[in-house]
Image (cartoon, rainbow, N blue to C red; front, side):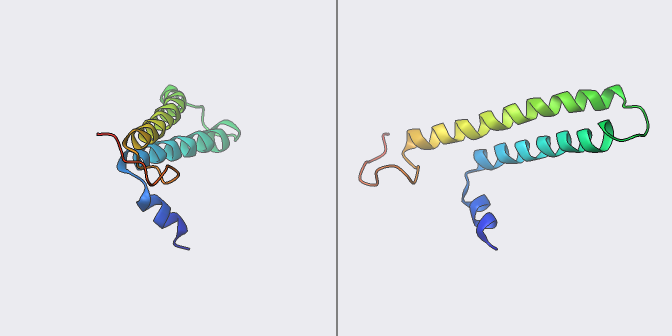
Length: 90
C-alpha cells in the first residue's frame, strides 16, 4: 500500500516534476481522445486542439526532465545500482 508513496518521495525533485508533467500530459491526451474526439457533442474549439498538441510537448519535456535527473544522479554517483565502494567525483 505504501509502495507508490515511498517511491514518489524517494525521487529527487527534478525527477518528480518530470513524472508529474508526463502524467498530466498523458491524462489530457487520453481525456481529449476519449471525451472529446470519439464522442458526439459540441465542435472542438481551436484552443482545445492547441492544448492537445501542446500536451505532446509536455510529454517530451517531462521525459527530458526525467532523463536529465538520471544523468545528474549518475554523474554524482548516487544511483543505487552503482558500485558502493566507488567514491563520487567532485
